[in-house]
Length: 247
Ligand SMILES: Nc1ncnc2c1ncn2[C@@H]1O[C@H](COP(=O)(O)OP(=O)(O)OP(=O)(O)O)[C@@H](O)[C@H]1O
Ligand SMILES: [Mg+2]
Image (cartoon, rainbow, N blue to C red; front, side, top):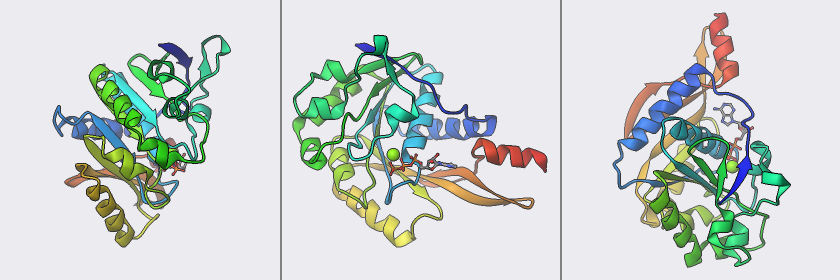
């Protein structure tokens, strides 16, 4: 397995880490038969990639092995966001190379400088992502991930834009919807949930992201989540925490 060197744009603050820890715990309590989990949303920019990356990091910090697969071959951000560099500046291959038959499964798995964190990047964008995601190769990749890693987290395209996520969901143990609180209406969330349910995947819950909360005179963004039921309020990004401390 080749190695990539990655760095995160920012360290999550203490409160953000706490929030991720509870998300991690909620997922662990879904049972040991839920280890391949896909993340989607209704529309772009609700925070899927942010949540998946932070969660993968949090799981690896807890001493477990986690594989993150980026299936968004329409708009990949992982390489750039992680400042990923191949060992000896080697080219980094991804999912589209594998699904189109140009690379083997082993050639697209990468270990990283973060202990316990492994990656499959999306690779270059392709004209037919839905079609190649439907191939049995995708199931093979997820199944191989399941046999080697404690968790496989899968970042997907938004459901409102394409059916890619529903195609991937068929091969996963569970699905999580990331919902930006002020991003979409409840009717659209229900529609997307139905679409996911039709794939037969077990919906584990939702991460309500970018929740604007009034704290003193400040309105800030927070992570908040519920798994089956409401778990209360959680703290959010660094900027919010700084504002919080000022009060
Ligand atoms: N909790 C948060 N607080 C503040 N900003 C956030 C939060 N979560 C995500 N963002 C910001 O929102 C933007 C979109 O996030 P991200 O790329 O994770 O969304 P996405 O759902 O993966 O988008 P896409 O559908 O394009 O893949 C980014 O600039 C990210 O930094
Ligand atoms: Mg994304």
